[in-house]
Image (cartoon, rainbow, N blue to C red):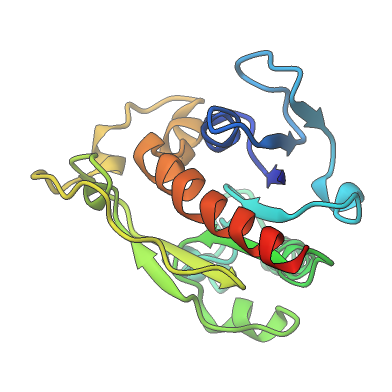
Length: 208
C-alpha cells in the first residue's frame, strides 16, 4: 500500500506505516528531521496524482484557519496588517482544499477546530468526522485534534491513560516552540497505521 504523509518533517506518522511494511513517504517544505530517504522535500500538492492509496495530512499550517486565532483577522499582532492576515487565511484554505479534494481514494486531514471564515473558503467543506485526544492513545496530555476523513473509519482509542495537562503548558518559550507544539503523538500515529493501514489493505484486496 502506498501512503503519502503530507506536511510532515518529523517522520512520526511515516515511520509508523513503514514499521508495518507499507510503502510510506513523507513530504514537507522542510527537510526530514531523521534524515530519512523516504522523505520528499517540496510542496505535497505537486505529487498528489502519483498513485497513492492513502493520504494523511499530518500537520498542515493552520494558524489562520483555527478558531483560537480568529481574533487576529480583525486585530492583527504587532507589525502585521489585516490584509496580510486575510491573505494567509486564503492561502491556508487553498492548501486544505487541495488536500481534501485530492484524487486519492482515502484521505485523512488533521487540524484544530476551524472558524467560520475558514470553512466558507474550503472547497466541498465537510465537518470533521471526529476529534481525538492524546490521552486516548497513551499520552497523558490534552490537545484536541479534529480529523476530516474520506472513505476511512473513525479512529478507535487504544490506550486511555491518566493525565490531562495541556501540551502547550509544557513548551518552553523560544524559536522552536512552534515545532514542539505541532509534533505528532506516536500513539496516535501507531493507531493510524494499525487501523487505517489494515482497513486500506482490506479494501484494496476486495477490489482486486
